[in-house]
Amino acid sequence: MNFAALKSANFRIYLGGSFLGLLSLWMQRVTSGWLAWEMTGSTSFVGLVAMVQFAPSIVLSPLFGVWADRLNLKRAALAVQGVNLAIALGFLALAALGGLTPLPLVLLSLFSGITAAANHPVRMSLTPRLVRRERIGSVVNLVAINFNVGRMVGPALGGALIAKAGIVPALAVQAALYLPYVLALTRLTLRPRRDAGLDHAPFFRALAGGLRHVWQTPLIWRAMVIVAVLSPVARGTLEILPPLADGVFGRGAGGLGTMLSTAGIGAVLGGLTKGLLPPQTPGRMPWLSLVFVLIGLALVPLLGVVRVWEQALAIVGGLAFVTTLVAISMQTAIQLELDDDMRGRVMSLWAVVAAGGSALGAGILGLLADAFGYGATLLGAGSAAGAGLGLYFAFIAARR
Image (cartoon, rainbow, N blue to C red; front, side):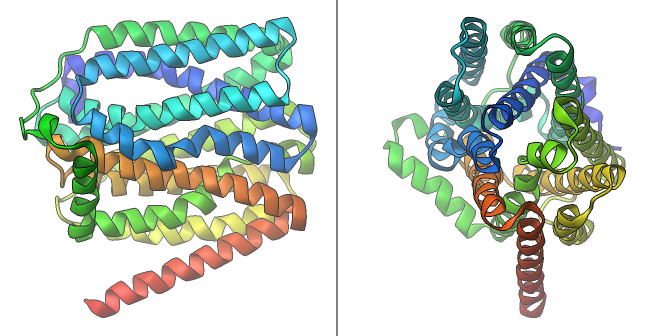
């Protein structure tokens, strides 16, 4: 089992506080996705809102990654979550005053995406330094499980609050949930970081050093390629579920919450499965994860053609299971290869291909779905990505 990081009180404090912040994050995702669909009835607009929440990571995460390797991470984490709280209060104020129309929704979602671009390298640099180095693999797994439990509970809570109480109470709860997270961050103690003289290196030279490290480390490079294919198609599909839940099945906000919670259950099971497997060996990529990549891409076309609600939920849960297990495996493989002074820059590039890929995928899939239909889009995207990645695996095997 790979849950050794729970022995650290420092890490347990972080895990508890971040869970409440994650509940708020996932409630905000379902709220903004539902508002986008309710305002316009457009799959493209739903995809746009999802895209602006993730797309800033493509450009900005590498820049924030350099700062994560230079700055006091505890203060940086507090600043990021403080901004998240301000954004949640902005959503609440506009909704209460009747000013939450499509343009403010896109702008607030964009601000949330910019903050997420900073949060990715900060979080992925901070959490390994809460424990001893030999427990880093356990940290990656437990943080992923925590993330996906929030992903399971948050949408259900958000959907239920919207359906029973309305948008404004849902947004008020989202803002309140950030306060305990900020408090937990103030109590953390970080393991010292090795001084590599990065503070004195020119900014873009330091950024180039992270890119060079990825390029010169085959294991990291291959993990990035796998996620760069999986994220836009499989994870991008999970970001445009409102048109499926309501447009195809007519289930409304409650149905969307159920579907996203099912994705959360699948993701939690994927994290638990990964935790029950033997710890990953540094320098190696688990072969089982490579099999699950292809399974995940095969599930995308199935989701496009299914017309039975229960079957759609099962496929969404399976898709989340696979993408989570693969993401944890790839991220663990990368983290085990890194020194602390390189972690922010390299993991910011991970955010580019993982979160940024999801954003691009959601936007492109949304546009294609409006043009060619939801089912046809998922059928074509999943089939093409699966075939391409299968050929890549065959190429790697042939070189060996």
